[in-house]
Length: 248
Image (cartoon, rainbow, N blue to C red; front, side, top):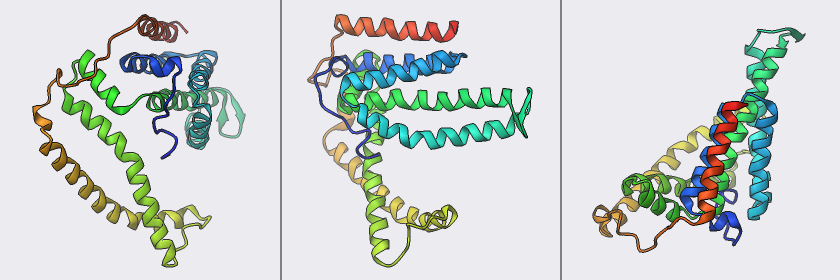
């Protein structure tokens, strides 16, 4: 996950859009995914997300992320199939209604995660926070908290990798094929990771306070994020996706 959601610099149309327009496009796709009731539209919105990733030059990273999400989506599909018993039986406890509901839940999981990850791949977190503060009038402390939490995801992942490597050097076998054994070995690692996380969060808060974090206002940002014609087109496309979700 460290290399998947990191910002990827580029000059594509998606990179040049206003961060708020990118966020609106992602929200439009996600809203369309939630509102859609047809498989055609669900698959189409996921394909649109992958096509946008290809245009932005991050298709390989999007496919890697997709490989991570597919097993989770299939697990959700299996749960839905086993729990939903309405409809005509197909094979054992599997019914056509269960397959339909499970398939849509599976596609919705993929359709919700991919657009958000795509926005993170083509937008600097600083630009996203500043643009939301400028145009959406979100208090800077909330935007900063959100973007900082995203920045800490790869940091915590690296910390976990370091702890696992240290424990592996001491003879702990984390490569076991037994998932329950691996889970039992991973749980004790949460304590050192939590201690390290608290230390990093405290250091970050102290550094932000020393730099006058509480004095920052909406006008403190040096860079401005005006809307261009393509940004307005993107906003209209986001609204159109929501309308498609309502109609289909």
